[in-house]
Length: 583
Image (cartoon, rainbow, N blue to C red; front, side, top):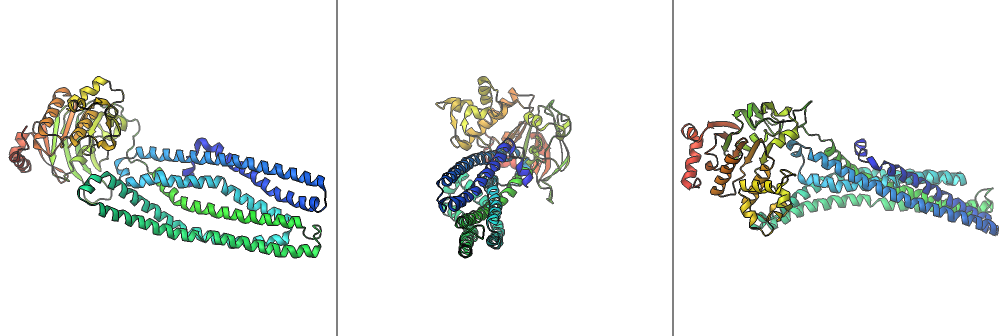
């Protein structure tokens, strides 16, 4: 895990190494300061030697300035390295998510990915800064402090060796208990983010059904779970400070007691035992040594918290798309001919039931094909195999005479324009949304595509026309307007294959008919696949596919299916009686 995460340091390696180097200098200066103080007391103040006092005073001042300077530099470099590490980590995760196939995305909820990109990365950033600063400073302070203390009086310094295992063991036990709790907390955060995202996305439905109370209770339940787990973790972590203070006071008490007895017995002569200045130095080293242990405990707590975050982040980084280019991929799609050869498909490899079974289908380049079927008949699943959003379980999907798995993915998907069942617009102007289809599209091309999609008329009614701002998700345009803008965006790709997945359901039948007529007349060489619920939307297609339970139940023209397919005939008659076919 650590090796994987450290790859995100990259251009901040220099700062990552400089921070602990500066910390080391800072620690050395802090270690020598008590020695200078001891000499100042023993050989300056007690001896009344003003020259020596000035000399030691200057040394103390210089050491303090150097310690301060390198402490500031260490903080600056640690902040730069940790912020850069977090930035690269977010970039690496986000970049990898962009390369996920649909099946990869299905493994992670939206809330989970958001939590990992925000909370988990922040936890790792804080831990990284602590590691390259405190986790370097504390051990060095502990080691150098012990060496200096033993150099002054070895017998008295044995007190440290008695206290350290007690404090260290306590901190280890606390960290070990806390880690699984934080892992559980972050998983609950995923649920919280999912709940909030779902509520905000469907706020109009919530309000129309007066379900605010239900949503509040659902949020409260998850929030309470986080509160309980956090409280449990914090109660365990609360033992850190009392344990630290008890160890510190016990250490200082023992040093004061035994140190005073040694001074009294030897008359304050350092050569015979211990001097007053040396006792003060030992007291200072006691603070430094135990303070370093406190820093280590804080670092352990932060590392414990971030360990769970690191594991979750590595899950994203190690997830590889199961849709990848093969060797020497084909870089051009010659035409829009499509063949399904005995295709089987399932969303999960472990699923017992096939989503699509034994699909054999030929679509000539430039044909218009309609697909009808009930909810759950796998109409969308069928067309998602064409741009290779998923891979088949068995059989082949062939586009332009080549298996889709042999194409360069970007090339294939640029040749297939898909208007999904769930239309999505992004915050920005209408122009900016349309240019998702073609970044280099001219004004004339934008207008032409919108006219084909029957969108130009309503765009012209807006005061700002094509510069009208679209709110997030397209909330300030109607469902039908959104669908027509999405169709125009797809047309700007000038695709070999155009797939409309129930993407005219929110427009009236007359507008639907005008869209189909424009597509038939203006882009005759483009293969058009229209998934629809209305028979009127597909009855003039070159061939109509009737799907039922993941299989092709019938295939033919409108007239042929009226005679041969009971399913098609039943749908046609029920809709014609209801007047849905009127144009």
